Amino acid sequence: MPATLYFMFYASLGLGTSLTFLSSHWLTAWMGLELTTLAILPLMAQHHHPRASEATTKYLLVQASATGMLLFATILNGWVEMSWSINEMKNPYALTLAMSALALKLGLAPFHLWLPEIMQGLNLLTGLILSTWQKLAPFALLMQISQAMPPALLTILGLSSATLAAWGGLNQTQLRKIMAYSSTAHLGWSVIIIQFSPGLALMALGIYILMTMAAFLTMKDMSSTKISTFSTSWSKSPEKMVAMILILLSLGGLPPMTGFTIKWLVLEELTKQDMYTPATLIVMAALISLYFYARLSYFTIISLFPGTTNIKTYWRQKNIKDKLILPIATTAALFLLPLMPLTLALTYLYN
Image 1: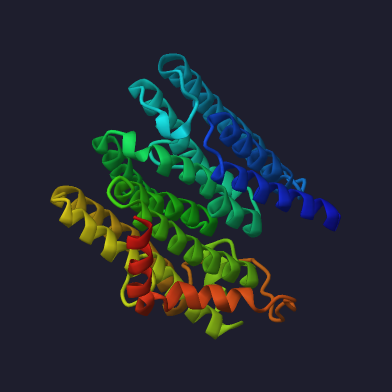
Image 2 (image 1 turned 120 degrees about the horizontal axis):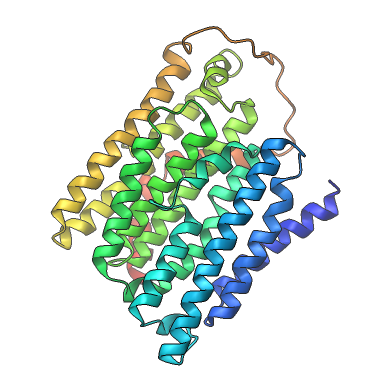
């Protein structure tokens, strides 16, 4: 694919997300969502592989369904409330329908089953875009309508996302599917706290994007998409594999790494709101998630994956032109915990 087409598609992704960010009217927000969806489709299908074509078709159908639900919710609210403003959605049926549509777009449980299957058919760079950038526009809309949503609905949505994604990732051997379930689980932590502290939810999403970027770039550098190939990468680059293990443990929320910040602050806010039962349940779900991150770390350096493999081992690594993004993302994914007072100050300033 020519470089000009890449530039056009990436620019369209940025333009669509920015349009949704700046929108106060539902129609302009809908246009931004559609622009981001149409811009990523050629990137998903660029390799002309049957799995890539299948993933692209599935993604188009899922996003079209979610967009149709969202458009129907806005029409219902405009008909009843005589308003198309995002901040003035007050009809309970329209709110529930819009919430379901945004949950489908974000891959939140119980609407998350499409995400692992689509991620499996994509290359690692497109999977990174799908796991990070494509979450921004729907999450911005969710933040704007979250204060009008019933708190119990957001709590159930967050708990179900964290729990079902943790259970779904237990028996996976494909790294892209594990990252898809990780996306759903981390978004559950953001959704459960968005009603009490939108700034904290936004900070949790930002930390998740940093950790996911570091994980995907490391997997791309090592050309690994399965545990069986991941376990043979230790002899090629021990330093990168140690960094990858630390990134995985950071995704699991193990202190003293950056991922622990999300768990700590969210649990603190939930206890301030006297939500002890949801806090206990989401911690138990986080322990399950930590188990499959630790399992992946175990198969990476402590032992080889059971069984033999016929996969070709690349002893000479590819020459990477841009060597700056990966170290920055890895450092941010591991060592941002000391900057927590500054992030807390910015969060309270936002709130």
